[in-house]
Image 1 (cartoon, rainbow, N blue to C red):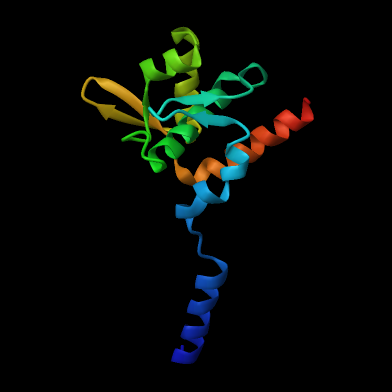
Image 2: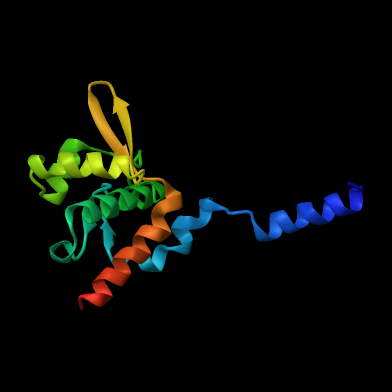
Length: 141
């Protein structure tokens, strides 16, 4: 291939195929604030819990943790099992199977912190999850 074609292809790839997930939180801010609130001590409040299933609540909570870390209200963007149990009010017997399903669906990842297990969500899933929840809530409004 000649250099001119290579440069042109490179520019096309950069302009048309490159994805920058670093701005996903900013891009989806208005959508996220419809479903999540964050306190200055890093706690996340999931809105509309009565209209969301447990897995959706967990994903929204973890998205909230991403925003809390970005705002420097929290030092990490993950949440442990106890935090999820306490903050979401989901019984342990329901929480653990939902976490397992979310891991198997590659929607969250598990992080070992000593003897504790924490969970986080990838920033590249934020938009997809928020759009899904928005559609669901509009449909049932």
